[in-house]
Length: 198
Image 1 (cartoon, rainbow, N blue to C red):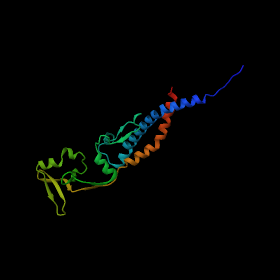
Image 2 (spheres, rainbow, N blue to C red):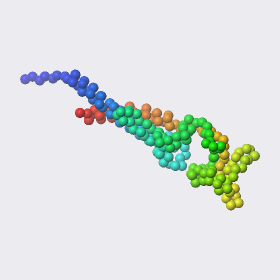
Image 3 (tube, helix red, strand yellow):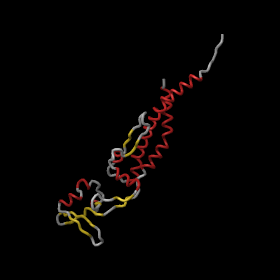
């Protein structure tokens, strides 16, 4: 009686090549999506709260979306894909000068300084329509007032431009998140793909 053990390296090699050809793009797609959602979670829960005192807690989640990768397009995207706050976010990411659409930028002051919903409930156009008026102070500043009974309440400081300081580390934090987990995500996804390959 004899037992012969033969290797089938050529057949195994062809099988591995076939598996790689089929499973690598699939594993890459899944790893990219895993990484994109991980990065989004870090940005929403850490990057935005560290940069801003958020009055609207849902804002980071609303503006930070994921566009998933596919086998045909091995690219996932994370960011303000619907361009909800694009100009606002870009200025705080890079810093720069905000210019007005018209003559001036209206900055809430006085009791309204910390009211983020002021522009919706009581925008400058509404203030002016309700007998609001603008006074130029001795220092040259232009202030919009609203009359409330016999009192005058300052509503907005009107300025020709505003300097926005860099506060948001969206790109830096996003890149660090990707570098931290992509390799591990790919290895896990590829290992599972090999296990289930036929």
